[in-house]
Image (cartoon, rainbow over all chains, first blue to last red; front, side, top):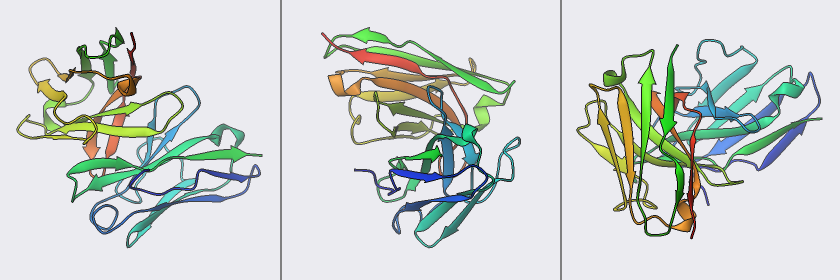
Length: 110
Length: 119
């Protein structure tokens, strides 16, 4: 069982918007920045969002991140079939002195 | 081109050892902490270990503590993961990545190297 809790799956139609939640506690999300990583089928993960809200160069503004207290959210607008992937939240656990990932959310674009 | 490339994976018997390497290029390796993350077949990402930019401190997941050592050679832009007393549940693709941002903002990620522990 992951320290960070994500829904196992979400789905939406092309062109629509979806949000993915990530719930932690005061030692994890409540104590450090959150990042989001996307893993397309059969490929390595890639950084989507860092420091809660920031996008690396080359990541379109369809992707956004937010954080409130001990929870974080990834938002994706104008969904495309190419967005179908597994999405993971991550942060540092200050009590464990260890990195932690959410269990991952599989996005299906219907 | 900013990238990291892992190597050293393979098939090893339970109880055996393996050393993974990760060569970085396109960025100043010596200024960033580095992570190892693994993914068992069909499973999610699991953080394994982290080392500070100068190698002064290392951090490990409980699942590998005492069996795994992370190290680096900044003169060779190379990160290592020495794995001992390997078990079947260590079977996974092992990724290295640069800790360029706080909160596990890993970027870039490598393509991964597969470790299979089986008799």
